[in-house]
Image (cartoon, rainbow, N blue to C red):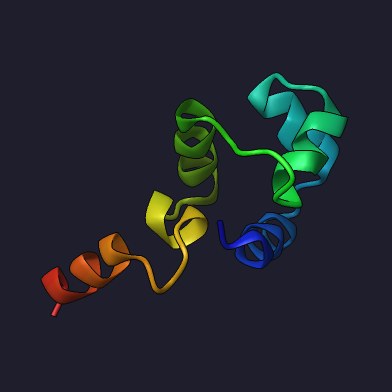
Length: 77
């Protein structure tokens, strides 16, 4: 996960960790663990976050060197 990207996007959107936890219907401590990379977001949470932040899932959650990101980059050329 690109944790710094998620944090940056969340802050740019004016969202707190508490608000994100409320939107995802999880405890704030669980959200903090997930945002800091100590736990993983599930697929539904990733989808909700990407929609909320108006970004593709791979732009937030996949490392830039992942094979899927490379395939996506090639398709957009």
